[in-house]
Length: 205
Image (cartoon, rainbow, N blue to C red):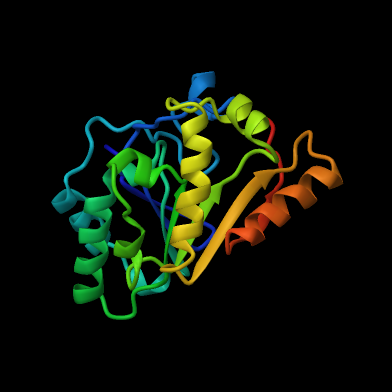
């Protein structure tokens, strides 16, 4: 049985891909885990088609959730076209659809080779973007992106552009090994891009 959607704290999480262009040092994937605190097994047998995912959604009582979160055990933005299609279908078929959030590393425009942020208007209510570091050097050390320094610049640019089209854009950092000065640097950076900062507590493996 493949886990496409799963529940956590009143929200419905969506797992569409295991692909990722980063190798974050804190990622559970590198420690032999197949799942997380949210669900036991998030490794997909295959990437679900948009139709498979839609059927999974429609089997649930969607208005009962506080939020729908595209997250998963990978970078969901690899499936952006399918996310957009799914949100459009759900808005048409499921009255009272809860707000939609994407948890992303912010490399969407880099991955797709174009600016996808205007396509989020009217579809995505919240974007949560992993900042992971107060400086480019720290970001690269923690995130280890496939595209190197270009990924840092792409993430910042994506955040800036997304803030024009998505009502709520949040950048996140984990508090592990962060000084108050680091947190303030991150907050100032997020706010300069039109986003807010959320500090997440480190969860030991």
